[in-house]
Image (cartoon, rainbow, N blue to C red):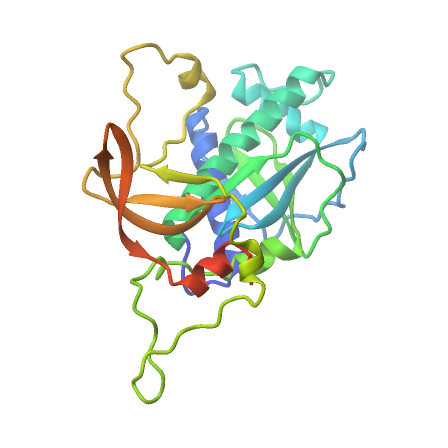
Length: 283
């Protein structure tokens, strides 16, 4: 959970540290220490670098933009071996299996970080691994962390955020969506926020609308273990409102209803028209 007294980036980094600690612990590490203050910095790796592995993630919701984790192969192979329950030996020849294992390890960490950021911000937050990275991130902010566990030698990884991701960290959507009542001006009269001037040209554009009941992060082994009759518990209580996402952005909440045999959503909270335009990048 992020600390409101920290800077947005420091709070985001704290979430990642907690996520790394959680995944390392799940994989059997009895002790985990993560330091970003005394870690020797790593140079930014580039696509095609034979000595480093890169993992690019695209964000959505209140995590718009891109971020990239990179690490030397000796680090990647240890993370992969830990994930695959193999003896830890960074000197073994690096293989595609190690590459896949390291990327899966980071996907699990990213899933934990996104879930924690969502809870801290009270808004949709997703990080999706990009299988086809077109190039390295144009870094706006960077940090190198050093991870020490009882399972591995010191692991150093570098995090790079682009400018869009850096800016999105400061966005606080805890007050959204809100009621349709517009804010009051100095005279107490209702003030309507301005809408985009080109809105009329966009009203016929079709956008994907999704109702979210809740989420659950699952280990890959649990996904493969699913069978008919299995119950997947979500992170949302039965009496909590469902969320209406349009183009991946939260715009309303409400109660699930059944209309002529189909599921529907009775909206109880909705962002103002101007706020919805901002959320959908129409302004």
